[in-house]
Length: 212
Figure 1 (cartoon, rainbow, N blue to C red):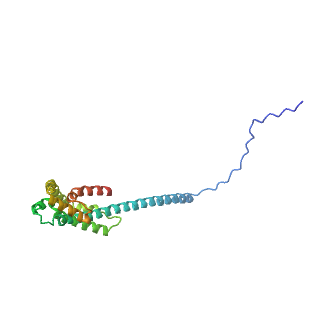
Figure 2: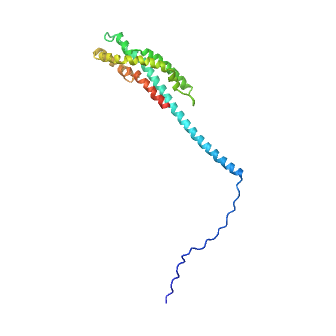
Figure 3: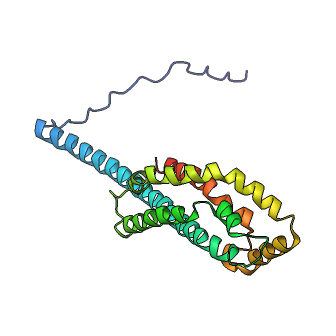
């Protein structure tokens, strides 16, 4: 007869006891030093994160401050160009009275914004981590509100007059020639120039909001 295979051993082999590794006792001083190392590493890590956050904030604030300064310089330059550019005429149909209505209190705007511009330049010249540009604008808030308030009240009347003047071919041709000739204003017309003071104050609010 053929030999029969032996049944498989269904029982696992007995476990062998592994020799236990000797444990060296950890002293209280070693434990304290380990905790101190962990705490030091954590403080260094958090310090680096805070430092990077501070640098990012400084770079952003510097960018916004420079933008405020740059736009203010452009704005003041535009104000100073309006009257000499568009008012230098002897046309009978574009009288001194018309110009007084159109240009309203432009000179007052130039004075107030010139002072603001000086303050912004000084703030940028002394820029640093603790520097702020918001105070410069806030210190001039009353003067800005006063001159812009007067301008806003006269602005609708100026637009009506300008529309009427542009119906005169001679005046219309003159104003068009002025807007084309003045390259510093990127060929903007008088209407485009007159709306700038209306748009300026909301611009400050947006930029200051960015600064937080």
